[in-house]
Image 1 (cartoon, rainbow, N blue to C red):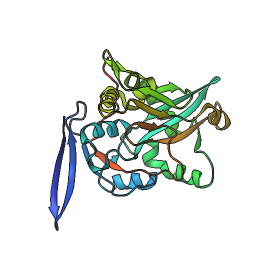
Image 2 (cartoon, rainbow, N blue to C red):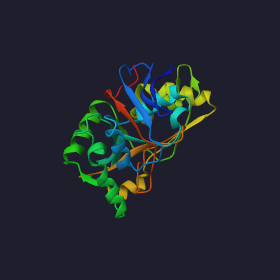
Image 3 (tube, rainbow, N blue to C red):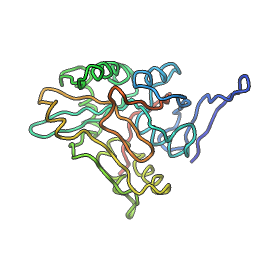
Length: 256
């Protein structure tokens, strides 16, 4: 597999028109250059839109990193359009993941400024389960098997494969985030001497304080420096590199 570049030179500077991957499941998908600076999530969404694209998902970040081999700031902290929706059912807490590529269906692409404003005022982004976006997200996430019980953070998962799978790649939370990219990502981490992958979730004590049976807490998902995934999401001070994606596909789970 390799990262294929289409570029042009203008006034002595090289610009990337698009990147394409040889990664299975990404046929026809085009990636833009990375933002040159760290951006807040609202600015990251705008960066991608300005290039006639949508902000990358967690799965897309994973596939790009595997093939980029550290090029174009691929290993830096990344902002994504993937959202984590934390909710309560009975006495238990769950998190649903969604990254619909259509802007009208994606709460991060359409409403991330609400999260930024809530954080600015010291609040969590809490919405009723009856909210249009929340109801759609929960329905899509259940259909695509991306609803996971919340476990105590932090997850420290071994990347070395035993037989054909690794602890990291086969973990339910990682599968809900990365799908069919999970095991290839684990292999990449292990090859680069990252023996553990880390996943941060909001703690049960935080959720118990803010979420009831009628509400949901929403956070964008950030992808940290190669070996960790931050499912606690964004607050006012979180910033990341942005990358746009064109012709984005829907989420793919690992083939069984």
